[in-house]
Image (cartoon, rainbow, N blue to C red; front, side, top):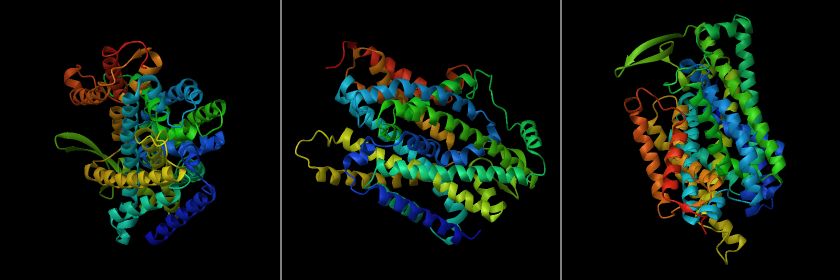
Length: 503
């Protein structure tokens, strides 16, 4: 398909988003930007959050992941369900009871200002890295399959996309994003279903035969029963639960949308609905991954084992190109399948990109303004002055996003979904421990030591992770890294704490 036509589709898509932003941001103030004036419909939020929680990372990496690991990622997704219920019945009631705009204000009320600032900073670090990693992955695909043919540099594309995101988020904030996310989730799911149905019909055998071939090819392997392996079911299940508690329940971006709903009962319905929607969508992505590999093999692609830097690796070659992992879906959709599938893929891809990038930019702006700069507490600041500060912070985070995208480009070495989960394990662990300590104990922390503890725990976890097999008798640390990190942080907080709540 012509790169010019694909680029035109992207531009038209942006114009639609800008139209929605213009309509929803009329007469918007700071309350609309931060929490949508608590007037969002729960079912709109739930549907739109599917796109936010999945992102372009899921759209590209999950199908490709099936070639090397089968369905073992679904073990993590099962854990997500437990995590969503914990968020719905433990954290949401707490946030609504305290009438929070920033969820990290809870840490200030319970543990003190230093813990509050530390928790907010860890969120800012976590969300910045996670959002820019997702953003980089999508820009990488656009570069490899469209923009290189047009002679458009990676740097120009990144700047242009961030400017466009700024244009439709800088005024309306959450009030705008709730509706743009809904539109984008719709397009992403339509693209997923269209590609799924096309491949089923294009394969020279029935759906039952396709399922049987996926099973015989090892694509459907699911439950890992080896306790020492990093993909052991219990590790994946518990890791998935705590990833959801941390990356949803303790994440200002996700909770900012939830608490924009008028009451806790509707917000809880949103969270439970999201849990089931997300599970079904991820399952379809995994099945799509198996079908993509079958489609490629039916077109002549083959698996082979090769030695790379002393380690055995699996490659999946199509006409001499290794398309295993993140390259599988974009390569087949844009280079092998009919042009209309390439068009559908691009629409789905950019629809998966923006819910994760625009929401993160808004949430980071909100958290930095409220939690770090404290604009709500500074006396004498007018609404207009607060807005001016908010916009400067919004622009600054856009520049930071740009820097981070360039960084991830320099360290990219293949499939990125595992890197995303690893980053979450290191950065969300201290945040999880701070909230757990506040909710589960009645002790007061030593606020002087809190920042040091929250920095020391991830460093210790990194050292443990890098030497896990040697130190732990062959045991491999997987997604439970988050739990280990939070556990170490919690232990240090307990040892240095004293009886009685912080005053």
